[in-house]
Image (cartoon, rainbow, N blue to C red; front, side, top):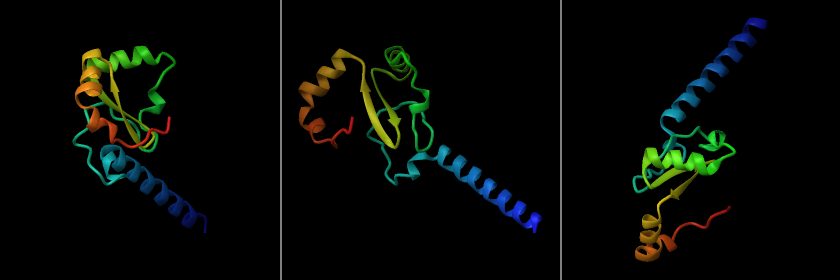
Length: 110
């Protein structure tokens, strides 16, 4: 009886680890929608995104990410992607030149 329970628990742990690794490697399969139009950004963890990596000095972290990924990059907080703009010229282009495109985005919960 104890061996059966141990074998079942071991199988559950192995299956959970395999699923976690699979969704960490292919995180877009959770939502089912590819995000080819979003800018590049750091990879986050499944379900929590980049949230565990956010520190107390957000401005320094965003500055370091901008030096790595450019003036416009994406981070995921939870299951939601957010686009961060860190350059005045890119912000001007988004707000002034492409205002219609960006006005039709999903409402932000924050």
